[in-house]
Length: 83
Image (tube, rainbow, N blue to C red):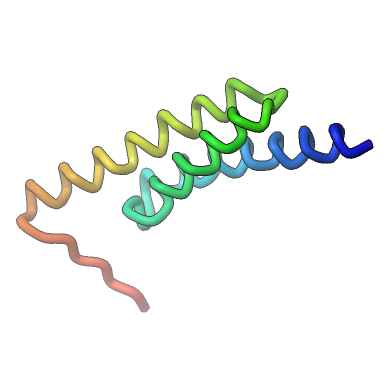
């Protein structure tokens, strides 16, 4: 029973990594990118059955940081408007 719970948690982390990486391409990529990287790597380490989603989460998390760095370099700053 315990092993199935750990696998289910790892599967949830893989999906969360994918979703956060996808959202991070548009919003708050400096926050969601590293979260996607951490969750994706934890899911892979814990032996997720959704390995593809965890790998996509890692790729999207890295892309989030590349988008942030590009936006920062091209506009000489980052402007976030809240509200």
